[in-house]
Length: 206
Image (tube, rainbow, N blue to C red; front, side):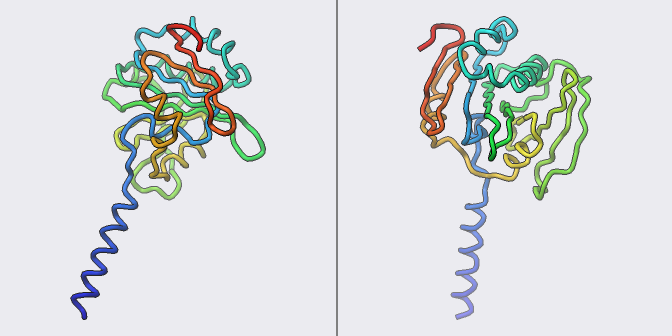
């Protein structure tokens, strides 16, 4: 009987560990489920963000998110990478905080400058990942490295929520579709997660 109970305990512990494992393995996994606009950048070097920012704003409801886009593009200006970058924006209403989330693979040379003012601050109840506060173009942003991915936001609570979560959003239809796009692709989404606008920022609006 003791052997049976011991075996049962081991099985419960094993499957409990599997359930609690973080299964997020690419930048798209960190996109918040409630997202209004998502931007995929596959080649940062080829994307002249400053020149294309106005087109991006005019092509979607990002024009309502001036502060978010300014902060996001300021951060993008400090990044140097050949990896996929995903930037997701959401609106502010009674239940959600206005914020952006940027996700990309962490590398030793991710930042153009080593002079960014970054300070580690206590995160919520997560003992594995820490939250870092940084100053970019006079904007206070927050970041964390999770499973080898650099995640940043203008909202501390958003970062802590992503840090504490271990669930991938890769099974959401529009996330799966965005994952297949090349170059720079912009998605604008409705409340039911339907894509209402798609634009290849190096091509044509669809």
